[in-house]
Length: 568
Image (cartoon, rainbow, N blue to C red):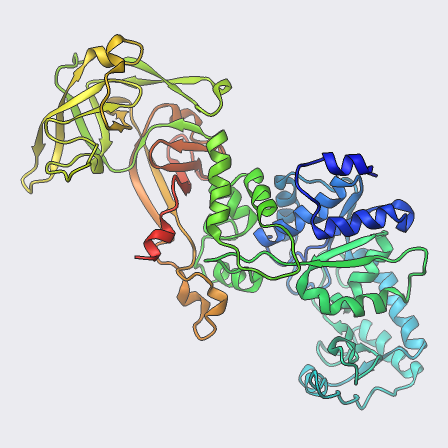
């Protein structure tokens, strides 16, 4: 375990309140100075960035203080679970930079022990089988200010309850016809103590246990006991489980003693603007084809962020910045985007790409001549070196970088105006060629051969610098421009509208026929490799990108223009 000196030198930030609790417990010698956390995802969907915050806490606090963290799948509902989700969860945790070693567990590992405990509670008169419907049970729960009503089946004998429970597991009764409830206190001011359901009948085969079980434990009964079976010392979860903590402790104390008992600690969940975090709603988007799958780059899923080009370090840095508190908050997605830009600026390779090309002909440049210019891969990191790019008589620039009648302070290309072509020469516009409709087909320029980098004339200053690609060497590619999935800041607050009506109709724009430099023909199939398209934004090759069809996802624009646009 970490010493006092190690605690203060492992990083520069102060301990958050969860870390402080853990540290204090370690210093007090609780659990013999042992630290074991767990991350307990339900394999009923892909993880999203909210789960990333929990992963960083569960694995991070164990890592910080020399403990261990288990990965335990909460696979107690076979109706919604799938092996696909199990595999995706493993991939996401590894991508974030964490590992659970040989400590991969499943709630289903403990089904025999949980079943035996339930039978013991029945024999002790602490649980009973209820034949009522879920609606009837809900009606009898009462309100926070009014006590609930006891079930008419509450006083069955232990023998009758045990027989019924065993027959429930044998498959004699249909789904939903009976449940096992804890016999606690229907007048308790804590609604969760009003005879909570412990088991329900589910006939759907389980992805690990098949048809061995027909009764499955509820979260409140399974979770704390699973923590206990694994030796978890600190069960860290989000704030919505704070009201469940007394019930967690109630069930755990049926097993634990003073020598060891897991401790539940709650922190605020991650909520983002222009985003929904409900796994149910995200599943709806996938099933209804409103997105292209769980890893659609517009989704807040970890796999979607990864495909879009977010980096693990940017996500972890964002989580560190927003921190952990006891208060729910709505975090601005702009802060996440800032963390992404900050990291990509340090690691992305700089390249040239033209999104909306128009041809430039340099009339005084020798026909057929090609020379190579050298470009820095990343000025933030000189160790990344350089790469070469061809320069020729015919080039492509952005159509938006030329205006025949420019306004003041237009520092791009215009008739009789000069600009520098990045890494190459200064050129001057001498004329244009238009089609029958008046659209510009070609721009004619001359170049100053003394202004190439390294020559004396390279020090001559002009106000504009443009990106470009050589027309004969340009490679065609497709760009997918992603934006925020929802058009309103807080979709969850729009209770009177279906959340699907709030989707941003411009969240994806596909631009075909962009022109990219030859360097990207070789490296544009390296999925996840970050590039900065100079003056445009950060892009990464998509999983579908091939040498025959290069596809780039825009990870993020160079600057945040969204907030400004929304305020107009």
